[in-house]
Image 1 (cartoon, rainbow, N blue to C red):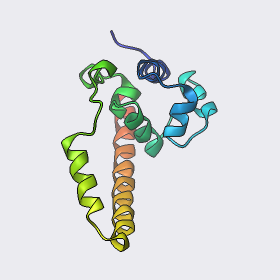
Image 2 (image 1 turned 90 degrees about the vertical axis):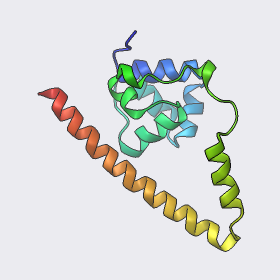
Image 3 (image 1 turned 180 degrees about the vertical axis):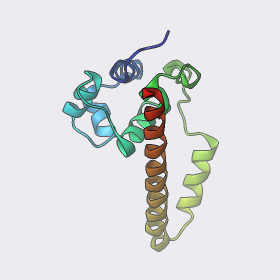
Image 4 (image 1 turned 30 degrees about the vertical axis):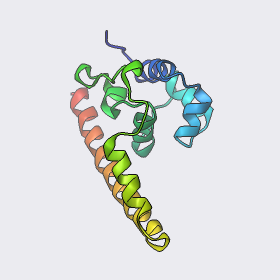
Length: 133
């Protein structure tokens, strides 16, 4: 069953994962008022915030925005409880670095994520324009 609005998808997924509006707000560094406004359809999350929401809710940003059936998130009951092997590998590698190098790596990763978010935001704008035609 397709959930029609971004707010409805956000609310349903948040509840499925057992998150309060405040907890979700904390996870994405926003206020609970922002989460309320997104869920009630008063505003929409943009760019990096949308991507942070998708990570917190363990779903794709395109599913949140458009409800794409092929992008349906994994049911909460089927989500892994522990870190994936890839996540464990990243942590092992990071922890093996000297302290002086860790901050540089974090800064590089943050820059890459920022670039990805900018690209993603542009792609979403194009998709929205195509849907309006």
